[in-house]
Image (cartoon, rainbow, N blue to C red; front, side, top):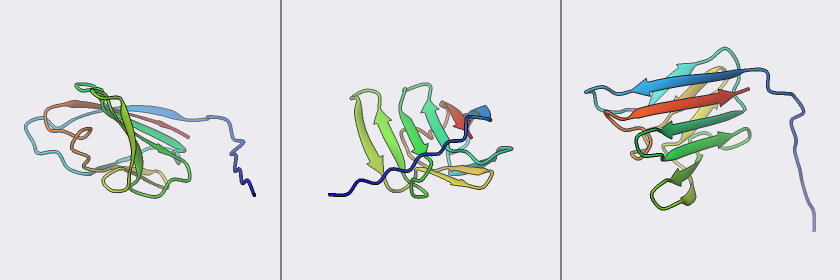
Length: 109
């Protein structure tokens, strides 16, 4: 039996908080550019409490999704979060990225 562990030793140097609202416009996948490469991203629908989280090393478009009403956590493999350099893409997950509902994105690097 083998065990593999990878650990990033860099301290958190950067943190950004972004508020996003699709006001009377259909929700869609969107990108935000930050001044650093994120190692952790959390997108929260503040109206419902549903969340998506992406951790350094996860596949692009994946996320750990928590549905607030049930407490169920699942790994989604499409429409999640992608980090590419200083660009963060928030996918069109229809529970988190919703028209006329407020979203907060927290990114740490």
